[in-house]
Amino acid sequence: MRDVSFCLYEGEVLGLAGLVGAGRTEILQAVFGADPRSDGCIVIDGKELAMEPTHDAIRHNLGLVLVPEGRKIQGLFLKFSVQQNMTIVRLDSTLKSLGMIRRKEEEIAAEEYQQKLRVKTPSLSQRIVNL
Picture 1 (cartoon, helix red, strand yellow):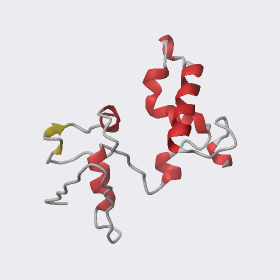
Picture 2 (cartoon, helix red, strand yellow):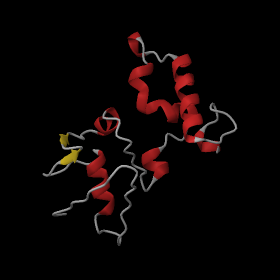
Picture 3 (cartoon, rainbow, N blue to C red):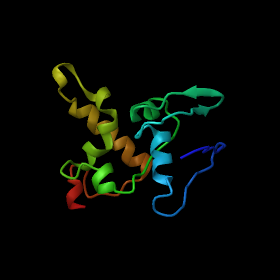
Picture 4 (spheres, rainbow, N blue to C red):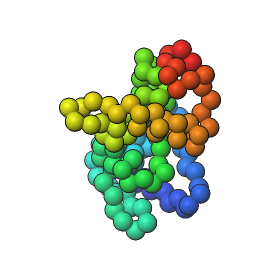
């Protein structure tokens, strides 16, 4: 892939279309930090940002999300609950000493996500595989 460039403004949504093998998936994964970039940079609000690995994209709190093509393979932990899948990106903020998860904080975070994203599920404890 060469010379890929795009500019977005607040409130805009970017989607890429193309034939299989055209590189659209690789471009978006590189922007999000899921795949390494061989060169180039990502500039947001005039600041160059490192987006490697993916937690940098989350840490910068840009509203940037990546919905992978193969959600069951790349995007979900099928044997985990809805709550665990929702909060896995914030795992470091729910951990206490010795790597134990603060379940109450995890539950509160999942309820916040459920409300913000209007997630409809029988229960936050429901396993993803059973949805």
